Amino acid sequence: MTSILLIGAAGQLGQELQRKLPCIGTVKSLDRRCLDLTQADQIYQAVYECKPDVIVNAAAYTAVDQAEREPELAHAINAEAPTTLAEIASRIGASLVHVSTDYVFDGQSHTPYQEVALTGPISAYGRSKLAGEIGIRQSCDRHIILRTAWVYGTWGKSNFVKTMLRLGGDRPEIRVVADQVGAPTWAADLAQAIAILISRSSATSDRVHQGLPNGLLVQSSSPINGSSQESLWGTYHFTNSGVASWYDFSVAIFEIARQLGFPLQVQRVVPISTAEYPTPAQRPAYSVLSLKKTAAVLGGYPPHWRQSLKKMLAELYTHSYESAYSLRR
Picture 1: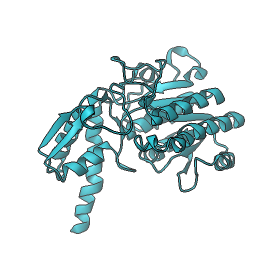
Picture 2: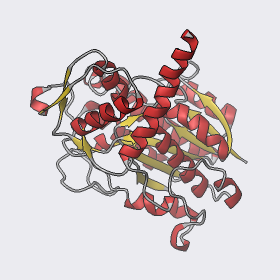
Picture 3: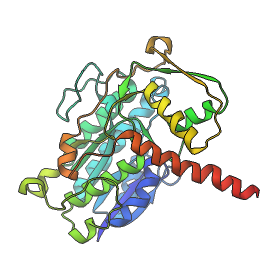
Picture 4: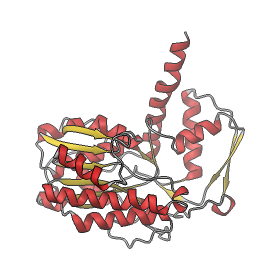
């Protein structure tokens, strides 16, 4: 059975991966409490002690605005650490799965970015993530770099959905940027896609593949078009299907949350421009990622973002509100 080392296990994606990865292998999980990614010696020790077949790096410095003030720390975690992981993976014959970002692009496109599109990050965070990609490609042939965007989840730290619910519970009006366009991504769908890509690249059996949780459209466990397993290494894009602005996303959050019974005070969501909401870091105006390559491997396109948002909010409501109500009874 495939041995997997999961790094970044405490984050919103990491916690979903802890649920999905046991379907395809045995998993050892590490988080920041037991692994400091700024310390190369700790990384070496952790990997050599585990000797995994696959390393999954779900850890990252994700504070986009703070990275403008801490570019060295962002670079250490997002660039140097993944490169070190890639070097070790190559030495021990393991593969590396690494999560990257839409922020490696400049946002000037008007059509979805393909994996081979020219990169041009416009923030310290984006530059650090691109440097990590480059380091991985130079250090380890057996790698999967999975770019994603606008990730949110039930578990882990705060995200856009949780922030909107918090603000919407206190304020009658919320102003949200409407001229940045991308694709919201549920961490649970992303985690399942990672599990499927690992199982495909590791040439696992149909029996293991069928053990994956339902959700994505998986139709075959054989390589696409008879291609070799080796051809599955490389860069992929994964988000939920569909396109939205942050304004569209927030309106949908409140609409679905209100239907589910979340306590909300918000009455108006006002669309504003990026110029009206200045931040230390620049964000891409358009960061929609092409899903064609990944859909070919997965056997179908991911669920639409509204569909996954509804599932996440229902899960969050059950976890946060129904459980709290039962405790008060």
